[in-house]
Amino acid sequence: MSNVAQFRAVTTSDRFSYRHINVEAVTPIIGAEISGVDLRQPISPEVAADIQKALHDWRVVFFRDQDISNDQLKAFGRAFGPLTPAHPISEGMEEHPEIWERTVDEYRTRRSKNEASPPGREPPRDFKGWHIDITFVANPNRYSILHGVEIPPYGGDTLFANLIAAYEGLSAPIRSLLDGLQAVHRVSSYDSAGSKPRRDGRSTGPFVSLHPLVRVHPETGENLLFLNPGTISHIVGLKEPESKALLDLLFYEVTRPEYQVRFHWRPKSLVVWDNQAVAHAGPIDYSHFDLPRAVRRITVAGDLPRGADGFISQPLEGELFNVLG
Image (cartoon, rainbow, N blue to C red; front, side, top):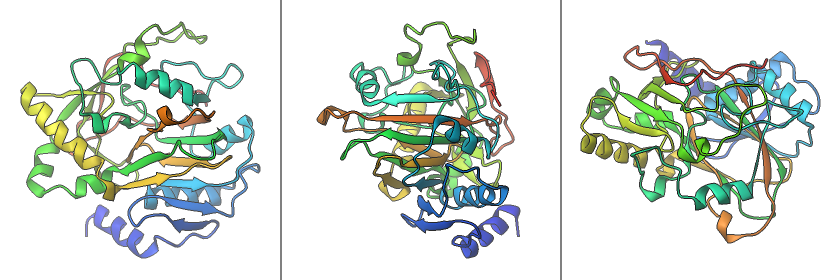
């Protein structure tokens, strides 16, 4: 039995077995709610290991009623590894450079500009907003952690998609084709336009990276579609019409409803997702309500992705995502 097959056999039988946390599945394929953990207190290595197992089993996990400070948020994130700066381009909070705060006004401004596509690439309207965090750098983050600071009573939901399930849902000939392909990821134009100098002096871009189209999950050995509609410009080695047709097919596949979970925020909710295996889409109903919404994100540092054919991601332009500790 292969290592991947052994892992699947274990997680199939052991998916609901956790020693230190309570886990309740939200859908059969992605998403689970964790209870029995108070993040105001430092979590033990055993609890951290259970949460990480839940991330491998369910890809994204949800916590409710976590009234935590910025320092407590960062302490929780560091249980899974060193933290990165808030973003390679945008500044974090002045006293907390690891934390990136997002408001509904920023979503509205970004989307209204209609500039969410990489240069030369305009994904179909249905896929706008879907992305993996920060793939325009060669070493995108491992985990993303988002805390609901100010949440409206309705609206502002976030969607998550299982990229491992999307890959496994493809036919064998298509998987074989994709396993040896790479794609160029570029920073989105709305991020690079008019960016201010950073306090830490690091470059604000542009960023361009070359990634495998099929990534091997570094912790489970599973193959997944490493596909980011927000940053991919083209597939290397294909003619433009071929690249566009294949990307359109894959964008459709990764955003199919059967691979998704939809999370409804409540005040002080907290979400952790495996950015190595999950795409997500932020609020899509921002134009229909005029209510405040603010969330704060931290990111755990990641490694250079490795493809199914052994290809290792490469920076083509711009710095790697650095670590703050």
